[in-house]
Image (cartoon, rainbow over all chains, first blue to last red; front, side, top):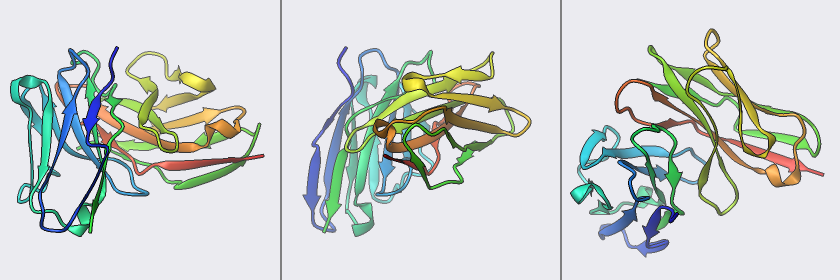
Length: 114
Length: 114
């Protein structure tokens, strides 16, 4: 069974530039999560999708971050414009609708904003 | 809203000694609880889960955790640790009603030395 795929693995951008991350969840997983993990901290939920609907996006900085999950499969997270404090690892995860919380994580995208 | 607290940011222990990593949760309704592990330079993976039933749950690599509703705790234990258990451990919680967000704690770094 293929795992959660994320790309790119690494990205370095200058502040005020834009960046996009892509995630392909495990086939059949209705729930998709995007987390931000700053070095030395726990994962912070940015947005959680159930199919193509949003379950929670209360901690998504909506003035600069956006996310979409078209057709309820893969998802894109965008930052525009980026700030220095956005430097982090962005984790995508997915889970079955029948197994809430049992998330499978991708390898993450390490973003460095300079 | 649900939350988890991991009081210990770092736990040093000698190889073959027992260890307990503490997790307390906060919620006004019933919850599902999880422990995830993140080995160096790897993604997060599920270690064990509590959904219902027996309060003592066993996971991979000899870890176990006990759900204590009266103390709102879900501590992780292992009777004898190995060097290879050195990793970051995260407690996570979600509510068991409908589609709810998965929230992580700040993590505990387990450092096993010879």
